[in-house]
Length: 185
Image (cartoon, rainbow, N blue to C red):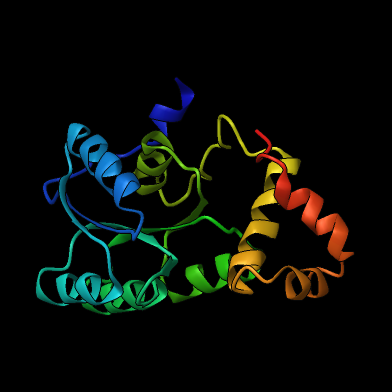
């Protein structure tokens, strides 16, 4: 595969920090990354991620942007300060240009929207600095991206349909119909 020639070796320091509050996803990713040769520490909070970044900064990190106890960019910032050569990928279920720019400015190597699989994450972690990462093999459809955005705003509005509709500049009944449907593929 052409993607593999752009990847560099993991190197002698195989330490990888995973920070995500979605426990089932975190465990699946942990197992997948261990199979790829990484030595993984997985945590679910900003506090635990920052503690590991301070005590034993890893060579690699995959950090979710929005966590229950704060913003994953705090972990990125702490890790970048302790280990400038760390390769850090920021993951989020809600991709936006502004947050991608913020993540890269603060020191992330790459930024991926969920659902990202272990292959996408490994490619982002091991990509050469001068190579652009390959496009995702199965990107989200435009309908799915729209649905994800609506769901995110709905959650941020504490599941208040009227407030969500106002923020999205959408009629409340239209929003109710969208929310009643299943998520698109």
